[in-house]
Image (cartoon, rainbow, N blue to C red; front, side):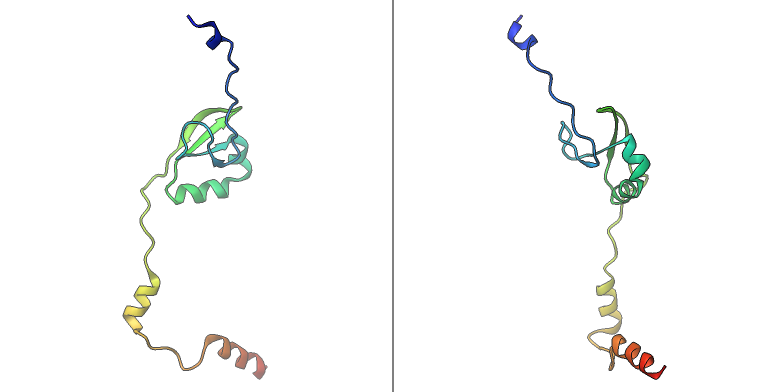
Length: 105
């Protein structure tokens, strides 16, 4: 057995502050238990975007959060509007309408 290998320093644990994991799983985000408690909206947004998240406690992964449903692409609302209205525009902009209403008060 090679004794030089036994005396090598252990690799440092990955940093877990809801960023891309710097350990082995580069495609998966990592969050600490503290992040779950204090930054849950960020984690929820990532889950809604379809990302898997590893949950770590004291540098060790203890769980994995997986989105419930696969995410569907968002509809192209601009394409829908162009399909309905074509290239027609309003004769007056919304900003001008609001400006006129404010002037009348």
